[in-house]
Image (cartoon, rainbow, N blue to C red; front, side):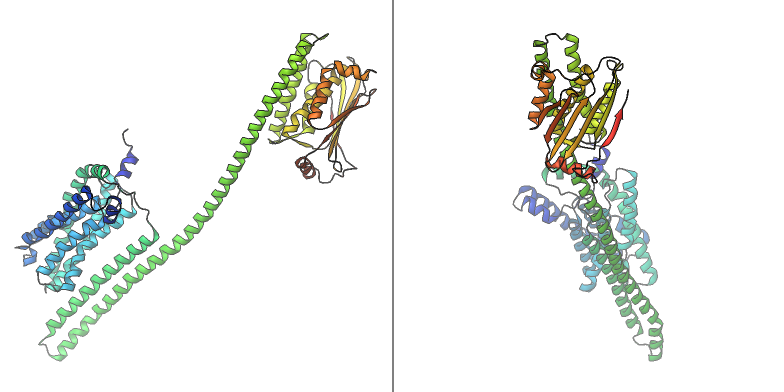
Length: 562
């Protein structure tokens, strides 16, 4: 598949391929490792040899023609090789050929060893600015968009100015005049900048994709590094120390020139001359102090900012992790509950199907319409259970009082019972029944209440249906009483129960709940049901009704009228 723009840019961002990484991942004995090192050593050798041919007749020999200086630095092979190696492999690959070639120039011009070392770091300082910039900013090093090219030009300008500080070291070491020093400095940084823009940039544009493809094919390339706080500290200190060394070196060389100029002068003239240069010594000291102060201050500010930012990130991370854990627990809980609901639904639908089959086989005097209506009422009771749970935002328990209210409302608005003048009264508190026990209990209430609506009253006769529910916490029981003012139950209760499928179903479901049901008063059709409660059900009842006393239950009266 073709790469997107983001993937293309990330693949060409600067990721140092260090020598240590090469040895760790591929070893010294592999052919590809030896080939890469051989090619690199060859470039180092070519860089060092090239300066010998370029030194003759150049500014190194004293030719300070502006155009000659520009041409020299614009076509300076060690810097071209070093910069390309820095972009394609890493800082250390480009640092060594540039440093050695520049040191050869300085040492070959009879510059003292320690000054030659300092002078050789001039170009290295420019490479360091490239490395620091591309380490901190992830941009396309193949310069294939305007943003990356503009960034490269700006960094090249800063790097060329930084490396041109070596011109002042050279001028001081070789007793050059101010005019000569300025010619050398101007030719140095302009030549290096032109080389970067007109030679290095086109090579990066043309060859970087090919080089990266070869690297990916033959080597295990590292991922781009994160910019760590220690790395920033090191970069700030390195830049500060290098700039400080250049200032110290320039000051020392200037002092030596002044001492050489004062040789042979009379004492008074020498004192006046030295006094006149004291201000420059003060400026030098202030410059060094400012650079080191800015470096240390930058480290302190970055550290303080990073510390506060880290605290904020840790706090936000902790909050996000807590929210994530809570959400994960909630999702797991809801998944379990939904799975339980689905299991209950499958189980209850199986029961409904079994009841329907029994009714169809033993319908007796009942018509097919009556069978369908009874099945419809049972299915509706299951629907009301889930509707109640949805409205109360509860997936693990059912508010049995709210269920009863909804059931009465449905019956009162039903076309079949609309002509009945039945007053429904519920005396109950909020009682929550666990999900695995709620559906059998709801079906029991449905059977008893439907039985009252169907058989207790003649059409047009007024009557009352009463449902009382309370909890006996001492015995951990739920007591339910269903009664009406209708015609009452037949005298032969046992025969009536044998023929009545609904009552058989009630007893089976109550036994499933380990409870009991008795007909306390046949005349008022008073059914008394006692069902033992579980610990969680009692706990929820206490939370929802903290002021209710077991023996003195204060019921919540709810009347539903047609």
